Length: 189
Image 1: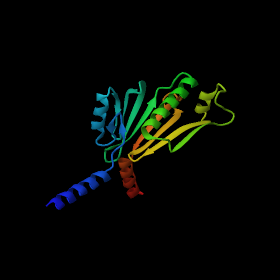
Image 2: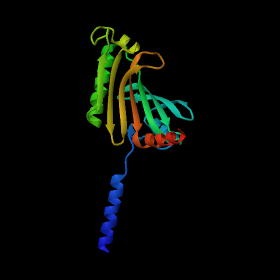
Image 3: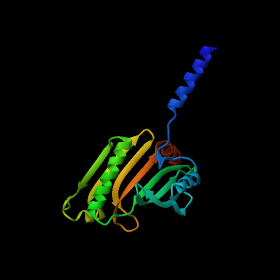
Image 4: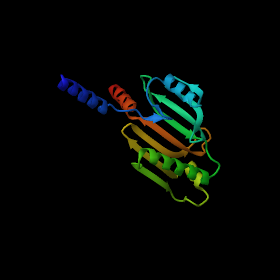
């Protein structure tokens, strides 16, 4: 009897150890129905701006700064990605400081970035006073990608889609739900 109980305990442990967790945003698993995820974000002082069949946009704060968050779902309706767009700062110094602060925090949480680039293309250079123009003209690339078992996190300086001013974006992609969506899409191809 003891052997059966021990065997069942080991089996349950192995099954539990093999279960993969979901990536989290604001300590909320990126999983489940969109409406449930939105409600959890609203408990974290995010406010719903727009809600469509495939996602939702909200406003709130992340690391003390105002942001827009975009919740994206799979075709089955489960949350799979969260995109965060920080409000554009007024100058390059603030943008650069915010980027490195977020990079340090993400490194602390997820470990060293698997891929990272911080470069300007000719005729632009860091310190020339035209850094924001370089981003607007797509002549600068600042990017870091963190990979963990739960998913992938991208930190990017890109142009804000609303005002085309350079701002910081973070994209969270849950491994389980993004893989499920890839499986669904591959059946369609």
